[in-house]
Length: 176
Image (cartoon, rainbow, N blue to C red; front, side, top):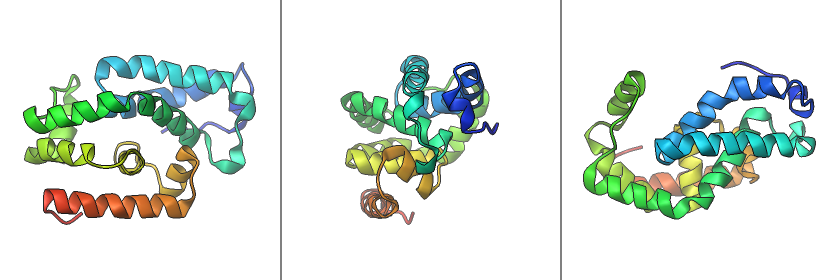
């Protein structure tokens, strides 16, 4: 991951560095939560919103990365119904084929044969619980970064994750 100083956000001339550093992971995160064909558009929209609202960026609330994940998660929230439908469909049919070989191998190792059951379990979580789980799992954000991305307290992240784990354990019958 490329590190970009927070000051690059405010400077329109240096914002390209923010885009270059974070676009691939934001697109990948969105692609894992929604269809890959939507990921490009929503990732671009994430950076358009970030560019337009760069004057309101507050580094004291978290870094650039969680700020971008927060914007992306809010856009994904607008597509909530489609996301839940996708997880329910995956629960019935399994995951869609991946485009990239590296992603396909990683997803197969990670998801294994439980992809359908996991998708169904994720569809059964509340939006807040699902956002926390997927920001941690797909975005590899820390609790602090998730809190900053979602604009909630650290304790809220911990409690949502705890509830989500309990529901996933119950649904999947596995220890998480």
